[in-house]
Length: 256
Image (cartoon, rainbow, N blue to C red; front, side, top):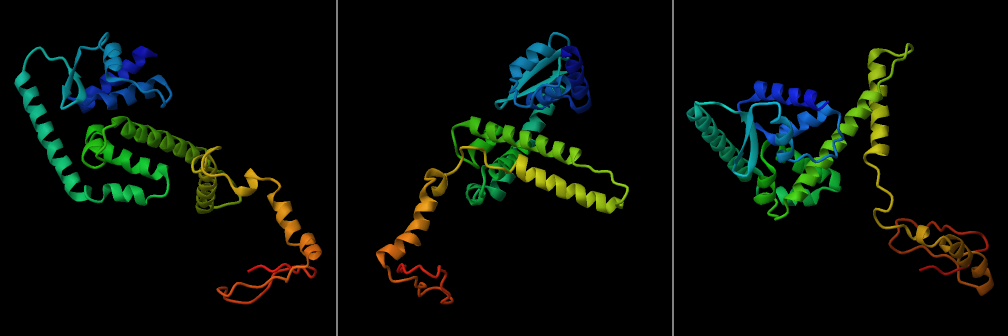
């Protein structure tokens, strides 16, 4: 399995070379190996495995690792390629900063869920880098936060693709368009349950969950106890748009 994964890496380098980011090759290796997407493979680990079988070298350009074929000569062309890559990446980063730099953090704060924020951060990281996103857009020291958002996005996207794939239906009593719409409804329902749900233990507990006796105590206070104590009945709040009263016939508690 390791040699098959290494072969997949070699084919990717030949197709997309001469320089390929090591993080990209790590994804290729894990996919070919059938490994879990939660496994965080380090660049040095990948190079150590694949260099046993491939004539490659690893370079670090402005803190980012790249793998390429190990040439015997013609380093001038490699140097020219590296310079052009750095120049293009610098222009791209400057354009991103100029376009969304001022509103990026505010846009993240505007979003309702961590999943949405992880998605945006991961998409920006895809065409820039972890170091860039942690730097100017977010202005944070911990690059691990960006890496965590990237990994969460990958896992959620993988789960969503599996949901769409396994939600396909084949029914003889439906047209193709009806089957497509039914598959979309099934996928959306499963997405709400399997991806968008709130994990157990997250968020504040409701008061009736914390205090199971709260509901019967309130019912007693405004029904049987009110009759015993002789309250003044239910009155609607003056801010309500109507004066409809909601009470039992024997409820005389004064609620203001």
